[in-house]
Structure formats: C-alpha cells, structure tokens
Image 1 (cartoon, rainbow, N blue to C red):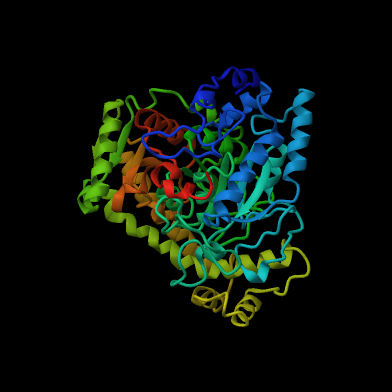
Image 2 (cartoon, helix red, strand yellow):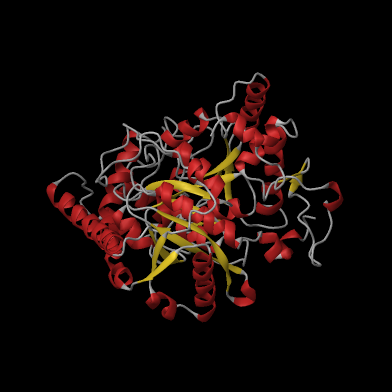
Length: 528
C-alpha cells in the first residue's frame, strides 16, 4: 500500500476523546496506561499508528516510551506476567533515527518507527539470544537473524526479547508451557494460567500491548496455541515463506517464524515484511510452487471476502468439544454463514489428523543436528557450551534452575544428529508427504478455500505438512468465561493471502477480541 493511502486512513479507532480518558466503563476501571497523546495503544493498528506518526500526533520515541511504561507496569511491577526476558539496548536510539527520517520524508515503509517484540530464540545483536536456556544466557550471535535484518531495513524497532518455553518447549515433558530456566514462568494475562505453546511471552506481551505486534516461532503449535488462549491473531506461515536463518532451531524441517498481533491487519503488515526467500536459509522440503516473489498480504484485506467462500469443518469436532467450546464454535460457524460463506461438513481430515503426530518423531534427531550446527556456526563467542552434550552437562550442574529435568534434551542427544543422510531424509520426506496428502485431498475433494479449526486443534497436522494457518479470536470459555479461544483457517501451501482475507472478514463481522484488563480488571490493581 502506498504511503499516501496509509496517511489517508482514518484515525478514528486510534483516538480516544479527552472526555473519555480515565472514565470507567460498565463499572470496570480503565487501563490508565492504554492511551498516550490520545492514541489507544491497545486498539490502534499499525497503519493507524503510522498515520498518527505522520500527522505529528506522536513521535516514535514517545510511542516507544509508552510501550516501555506498559512493560514496566505489567511485567515486573505489581503485576508479574513475565513476558519480557530482556529489553534491547538501542530501541530509543532507533526510534530517534526513525523520527529524523520522518522529518526528512525518507521513511523506509509502514513499519518505520513501530516498536515490536520478538521471541528470544530469534537472533539479535542488541540483546542476547538465549532460547530461555541458562547455558546460552550470554549468547550474542555473530549477526542478526535474517528476519531481524528485514525488520530493521523496514525501520521497525525491536523493543524487547520475549520469554518462551525453553528451547521451544523441548526440555522435559513435565515442564510447564512458558517456563524456562533463564526467564522463569510466563503467565497468561487473561486467566493467570497456562500461556500455552512456546511463544508464550510473545503472546502475553502482544495481548497486553507491550508493542504494536510480536513475532513468534512455531514447530508444532507454538504460534497458534498461545494466540488461541491469549486472544490474538496468529499466522503460522508455510514453511519456507519466512527465513529461519539466525533462529535457534528446534527442527528445521518444520520450524517457521510468524506474526502474533491483536488484529488481522497488523498480522498482514508484519507478514509482508517478514516474508521472502532467503538464500542463506538451509534447504528443506519446500512445498511445490515456492513462495511468492513479491507477496502482498495487506491488499487482500477486503470486506466481503467470505461471500462465496467454501469452508470445511468437522461435525465430529463439534460433538467432541466441551459444551462451552462447542457453543462458541457453533456461533462462529453461524457468523461465517451469515457473512456469505458455504459451510461444508466433513470428518475426513479430523479422522486423519493423527498423521501430524508423526512429526514429533523427527524432532529429537533434528534438534541435536540443529543445536550443534547453531553453536558451531551462529552463536556468539565465550559460551560455556559448544554442543548439545555440553548443554546436558551444564544443566545437570544447575538443577535448581533446570528444575523439571531435561528428558527431551537427553533423548535428543542420544540420536545420531544427522540431517542429509538417506535414512533421515526418507523418514522426514514420508512424514511431510503424508500430512500434505491428508490436507490437500480434503481441500480438493470438497473444493474448499480453507478448513476451520476449533482453537489450535489441527496444529500438528498443519505443522507436519508445513502448511499455513491463520487463527482469530472467537470468544471466551472456561470458569467465568475468562479464557480466550480462537478459530483457525487452515489452507494448502502458500495460501496465506487467501487465509488472511477470510480471517479479516470474519474478524470484521464478529469482533470477539477483548483486552486482558477488561476480562480481568485485577490486572490494574497497583497500576492505575
């Protein structure tokens, strides 16, 4: 989208009238840190922030400081959500540089001057990159990850690194989601419970408005699951659309980074910057067709995209869900139908979704290979470990922090740690091919534009295939209806543009997202 079009976008959703500041709504206290200079940090989209910056209503420095105030208040102040592991060293300097570019009319794009937070397995030079491991606490990699370079080239500000489930949730089966030996436990701001998935800090931070949006990573559910339970839009892209170079790997055949945002609009803007073939990314079993050369996701966001769309879903899923989850999924189906979509019932994919679990058998070998390769070629100097075996030993020497054990790491270290050899290649190829066939055959047989998933229910099979899913807030379930739940749009390879269009239209007709502070006003105690 051209710069002029961005400026012309309405600021209505971003601006809070002075008379409303500090007022209570429905007897609940307002979030006193939600607005700065009349801009609502929790509802303003990236293009609206860009327009406010262009209009001189706020500077990038002021915007960055406003997000830092939220982090200070909710992360380690009276509320301890613990989403942030470390702040970057140069965020304010980069904000100042963006403000200079703006004054000189030399902006780099719609993300210029916009603060973001990144999962702490994504390599940065302005903060350590640790994957939550005490063994990597001092790791400053030799260069930024490719996607960080892309964000910086677009003028975005990397504000902070987020806590995560250590090594992308590959330490021990008893370790809770969101825990790491270095960062401690992330808390879901909605229900104070499970933040889910390994991109838990990115999810909690994005939900509470620590930045305009966040970047997470997924091997199997680690973007979709936290987005599901923290009322976010999460995009798990086709493997190969977004570079993995410089990201601490779990299983490189299945790993990908992707956006986690409060709106589909923000997710589309972020994905448009992250997407692009990277020649430094290691070869993998790329889906046929390859990634688009110049992807345009923002231009796909149009009202009416659901009209005439064919969307599959499993009646078996509906009957198997708990009553509260089934109720909001059926409500979502009704919203989609009312918006013009044709709903196609079929249990075929749900009956084969176990195929996705075969991906898990590939992880131990790939994890050992990937970590050893990362430590040898990408990690910074001076670390106390050089191999996965060293990490096992180092963890054994610090049992007070690695308090849940490390059975996954030990099991991985016992594998050959190979990647290109024929036996590893054959097993991996078979796993990916079977998952792709399961999804593609259902989409083709019923001429579907997407398959609907209650929450992250189909994350495993989508991950095993390397196929995309966009998840959108759908409502709230559980005790007191405080735990968010999303609806996913699962598609075939390279269909992110179509999925975002469908998700955007569903978001437009449903509006199911609520702020954490509205669902749990106790978050504001001691803050406002």
